[in-house]
Image (tube, rainbow, N blue to C red; front, top):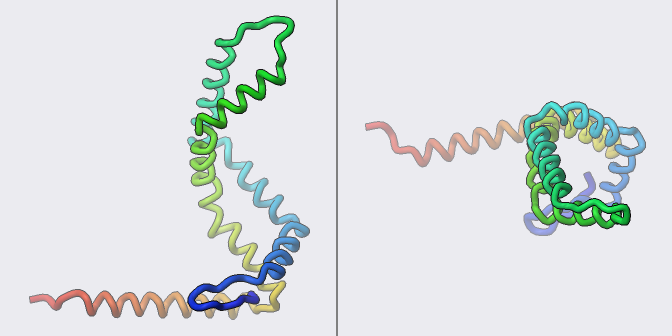
Length: 156
């Protein structure tokens, strides 16, 4: 990827990133990721728990309301939405849903597809890139093992 280096920081060229994102969108990959995640969401405990909590909250909210023919439903809806958002229940629940649905797919489904599109866009051979990444990973592992062997005293 086209990058600029300043000291230790490496930043991607925003235009290149935008081009790759546009390509991902135009190929329908974001929609595919969304469909894959939504297909799993209702089976996860985090989603079921969140749905149960929201339904309970809505139920309690509605039991405290006094019905009249002049009741402003939009105002009622806005008030409920505001209270749910202020409770923090959604933010926490959605984080847990993401942990259970999206995170497991990131390295096995999402990242490989994004890497493939990025390699195509940048004219990088994906197999050579994979070899290079494996080589770097093995080097880091060896370096870590060397450091660990230096810090462990020999057995007595």
